[in-house]
Amino acid sequence: MMFFLFHFINILNFDRMRRIVLIGNVGTTASLRDVNKKMVANFSLCVNEFTHDPQGNKIDKPVWFECSLWFDLPTKTDYLKHFKQGNLIYIEGVPGVHTYIKNAESVGYICVNINFYKVLIYKDGKENT
Image (cartoon, rainbow, N blue to C red; front, side, top):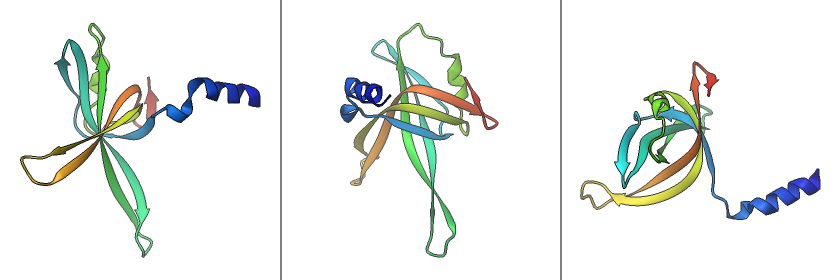
């Protein structure tokens, strides 16, 4: 068993792999657009982190991610209807970071973008496939 696990890890080169797993609520309903004959669905995802203040009170700290799903046409896109604001989803993907300046301000922003390849949609606390 240990040999198989070691061999499996060496084959996949996990030391060079970037992957992120998130469970959160959709912040903005998915929008679909055509980019150079490929389709992309974009939406934001809010993941809540919980911490405690010095008095022991629970503090909810939202962390936002921009998510993208790229695909070729023709691909069924009926599942995109589940990427609506407030829906709870699980995604796995490849993280990336980009920077930008908003509305000609002198302040720079950093955005974490996830190009995801696996998604599970939860409805009423239960997993939908």
